[in-house]
Length: 391
Image (tube, rainbow, N blue to C red; front, side, top):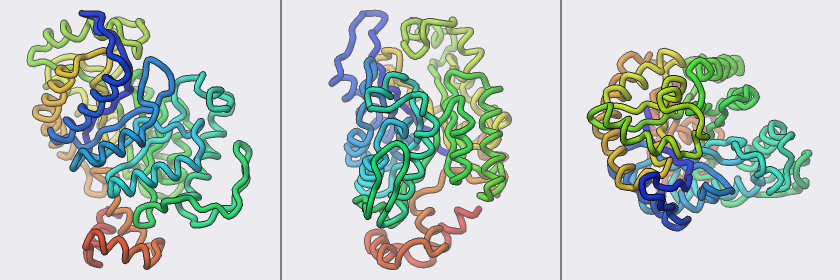
């Protein structure tokens, strides 16, 4: 199972000093957080996409392309790629380029975002959010899977004989998650294509998360992609930890009270009771997150929001050290202890997807030969990876 961190890239004043980092400092701190996540052995770093203050992550592919060169093992992802307000042609080009640069060490999460004004800023109507998400993603898939595309739709100009470049790495597009908090239409879309579904449930009770994930799983099976429990699921989360739970509460409370993502609404205790936010000891985090599989079924990715609310960089590093050193090893063991053999432990890797595509005859021989040249893979490797996917 994959464990990692994601950022919403908020700029929030330090509640103790009132100091506000500027955009440059915040961006550089996010890059440092991603590199530290790689160094301590976490599996995933993901960034959101925002185009308004107090958030700075407006160009995920620029950030992740830089990190592809600076990191060694960590999977690079988006916590949201705005499928509604980005042109699908640019998405096809930019994320195929990122896929090539990172040698397949990336994926992306499609979402509609949570900022209403972004729609008119990019020439779209928020009332068309769901139709935009459906049409744009359908076009994006064609741009990745067809060498020459002729297309006409409702929301952009037609395409005639268009080829998106670069082509996807090894002829296989990146793995896609569809992120949604409250829209069953997006869960349906993920299920229809057999893609992953990420429920970023940081503001919602488990009862709602359970309902959304269950719906996605049933529709995944309905469309013939496998059994419901084999669907690829990810969850969001939030934690703040210290050895002593009361120390964690006392330290985190001032940050919680000023954080824009919480809206100055419920108290820390109320919010922690109703959402996955867990402020306490490492064991409390382990106990709470290990229990989530009993609600939503065995899942494949758990991401934690850990650098928000004005927390100092030093504190964020300390939190990642605790997460990687004390929490993830125990959680990983616990999550795998009763996972059925037919249920995937991880989302499919690029190598596994290439092998599966070759086995299905969906990759041209020229692309396969190029892939072998760079990776040194053999036919036996392909069969082993394809078997891993089917398991």
